[in-house]
Amino acid sequence: MMPDRAVALDDIERTSRPAIAASGICKTFTAKGRSFTALEDVSLTVPEGRFCSLIGPSGCGKSTLLRILADVLAPTGGEVSVFGETPTQARERRELGFVFQDPVLLPWRSALANTELPLQLAGWDRSRRREKAMELLQLVGLEGFEHSLPSELSGGMARRVAIARALTLDPKVLFLDEPFAGLDEIRRQQMNGELQRIWMETGTTALLVTHNVAEAVYLSDEVLVMGGRPGRILSTTYVPLARPRTVEAILEPEFVELQREVSTGLVAAVEAMRQ
Amino acid sequence: MSGVSRPIRIAVAATYAGILVLWQVIGSATYNSPTSLFPPPSKILSFIWNTRSGLIDAAVQTLYEAAIGLLLAFIVGVLVALAADRFRRVGNILYRSALVLYGLPIIAIAPVLVTWFGPGDKSKIGVAFLASFFPIIVNLTEALREGDAKTLELARVIGARPAQVLWRFRLPYTLPGLFAGLQIAAPSAFIGALLAEWIGANAGLGVLMIYAMFAFQVVNLWATIFIATAIAGGLFFLFRLAGRLATPWHSSSEVMP
Image 1 (tube, helix red, strand yellow):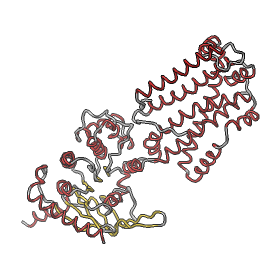
Image 2 (cartoon, rainbow over the protein chains, first blue to last red):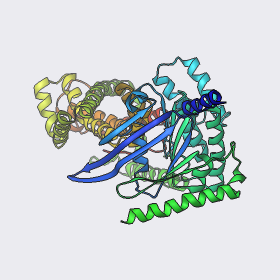
Image 3 (cartoon, each protein chain N blue to C red):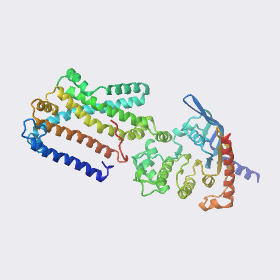
Image 4 (spheres, rainbow over the protein chains, first blue to last red):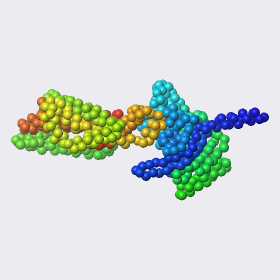
């Protein structure tokens, strides 16, 4: 029995190798002689293939943390590794996908041309990138809208394009910064269902920043609650529920219990902001 | 005019039609007086038609000078704006010097250029250049400065190189501003060339204007004014149309003089 068990443990360890490992992250912004510390000594680990969420009150530094992990911002201190590389190396190798709060589509490019933009910059030839972009637009449910300009797309469709674009280069890590903020509740639930499906189909590691407790619990394997000034991680809630999760599942007792736990964490986080 | 409602368009058209009719009536009534300054539009139009080949030659000459001046202004304006963007400190000095020059009245600098370069094309091209340079450089520089922070974050995330950031992300955003600049700059270049011709030239619409004025040929003078107005207005709408075609994704163009 022992050897089998050892193998099984080894497997578990291998599958849970860290995709992102950050320790001691600090970030101080300085403008016009005044400085503001947004993050102090933040450490976290996102295991490979997991879906993790950062949730917290406005101004707790969760978007800043996401931007540091994705090498959009440089930290003032601390270490980040993404699959053993620095975030800069990972970004330059185009291993990171990032979905912004606003879709940020280039208004002169069609949905298809926006989706294939990362491939174009990476030097893919026209037919290959077109094929790949079409595949991704299909994945996000936008077939038939390939040639629409962003101004002709609804808010939800524009967000789907942004997700497709972030997935074009098969990122090892997908960063999502409140990708569905501003959508109405029904549309948001739909998009969450789609995002879960896309994440399961691609098998990528995902890190989501959100304000929404139900969204965080529904999508995540782990929910990290952030708060305080400067911001830090206050608690972690594990969501060991089976997938795919249905939209109705958020009404089940286990879900409600986990949402309560995250909400309690959030109350503490808001309290920590006041001090 | 797509943003203008139909009743307003009709009102504008009616106003101009009213002015023309009134002008025709008063002009016809006073035409035989030796001091008539308002020949009726019918006389002016028939004069234009009868002397069309000479007028066309003159207009082509002035347009040519304006076009070369505008082209140079475009090239220099784009280069300086890009340099100002790339090398902030040197660029800002260049840009501010250019803005100080803007204070120089074209009407005052034109005689200087004609004195320097003589009555040929060069002095006209120089004045057209000066008249059209500022709208181009100001609009382009402002458009580059506005630069959308989110778009730049996107460029960074998807690993765009600096040249790609400029070409694929930033320059397309400047096109509406650039066309807004051109639709002011093109008529300015034309009027600049015309003005330089008044000071001294061998050919062009400005020369015809000056001859007509000194000979007190009021119909001739009005004919050149009609043509000059039509060309300046036409250039404005031409570049506006070009801007719309080049940036169909942009709803409206902000115009900065």
